[in-house]
Length: 134
Length: 194
Image (cartoon, rainbow over all chains, first blue to last red; front, side, top):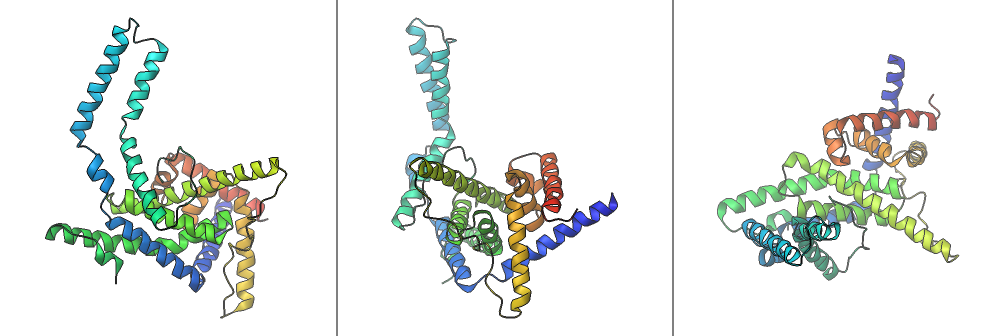
């Protein structure tokens, strides 16, 4: 068992050495492009979020808005003679919850981010949904 | 002009904090960019695409996660990078399916040598051997399931500890250990070391 572990460790060590060497031997043009990419990223970090400033309300406003809209939907469903437990109506409530989730505000920031990328002429291809981080 | 110096302040305290954060971010990105590029290039075998992916990951980290604690930047950065690489593979799979449906072929064939570094002027023969070994390792890594590959690269190449790898991979620490152990074992088989 210890011999097996030793060879495992050897393999990892060799793999790391190879990888480190490949990083150290990175060519000049690639290094320059990476430096440009880093500078662009840092430029982004200093940009104030216009959309967030203008459109993102304080958290308490969002919370009150959520409650108010949920109440409207519940009242509408109730006055319509249905029971809120019905699947379609519950789905509508769930949809509302999803729509009002904070992620939607993040999406506005994303739009701003992509608008900026477009300005730079470097808009990447669209990516599929379902990616929480990144 | 140093980009980090151009962060716009409002108050003196905020200016100092922002400058500090700017410098820290710059140092962090400088530290990870080349390694991230190598990982991306090994995984997608296309240097230009790898550059785009690394740039995207850097921008996303600085825009969305710069206010997170400094110790979280590395796992978060690699999580973004991992997701971008996965997205790239998904897009490519879809494109290939569409092209094959219409009887076409992918004109954007990736260069299998793209993951291999350029020749070293110091010792070309030694460099050639290293390149061949790296190419064999990259090929073996490609044959691993995605989760095993990610665990191996983050733990072995990047030296992330189990907790940071779990954060990057969005899984439990136990899963990281399992994926990593299986990856090493499978790599030994693939590289003829057992």
